[in-house]
Length: 181
Image (cartoon, rainbow, N blue to C red; front, top):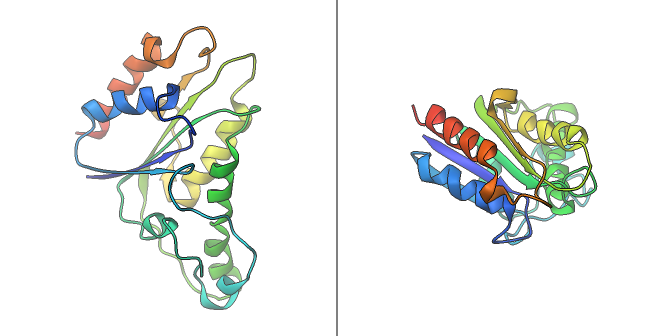
């Protein structure tokens, strides 16, 4: 089993990482983690190379994602202003290559089906609806199904850090064990 984790957090010791650390305790198989803040992933520059070639011209760590060599995709992120952080949105812009390949280059893009997991953390009084919609789009573009049963929300981190959120930690454990079967 191969798992891709897309980490949308700028903090290396924050709430998102606390939940990912817990998840990795139980998750079996090969795990590849991409951090949109520290790995080399550029946004789409609208060069339109994908319109004729059916693929992106930018050579960076996005190639790991384009290789489509995973059984599970996990999107884990804090919420910023009710949405996802900018670098994670930059990553989503690179799915333009999939669209352009189909629409303009008449090339079929085969993306294998995967299980999808969503982990969101945040504080304040914001609702997660917009961030969930954005994350579902990422999962859909990667061939991963969104299922509320595979969603962990720790939304009170201004008062209770994620590593103390017993409900979120329990759900992380349950999801990890289900995925490892």
